Length: 152
Image (tube, rainbow, N blue to C red; front, top):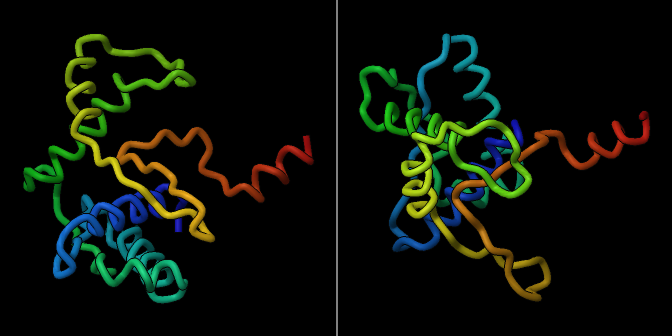
């Protein structure tokens, strides 16, 4: 499972944990070609059924995605639009890519709408702050990054 999807499911799970226990979350993706959709379904099944963390999170997240066409589905189209705005206009201190200034007010609104929560640290000694919008500059695992640095 790609790291960005694992982060998405983690944030989604912790958001759902703030809701009443009966609430469940659905995963909706913009439809890909059939072969890529099947790969994603298989990856999600491996994650939600084959890992302890995935099984735990499947108590709140329905582990099988729905696929829709974004040009026909307003909610997915809006998610695409939000991703576009964030990609072009939302910046943190270590992000130095060009910005489309006309989109900055919309990025600020999305920033204000994001989920904020907490995740208990292992061992119960405090919490980590969670944010619904996360900047990942490298999708490789820590082990892959360390291996790449060792090879350099």
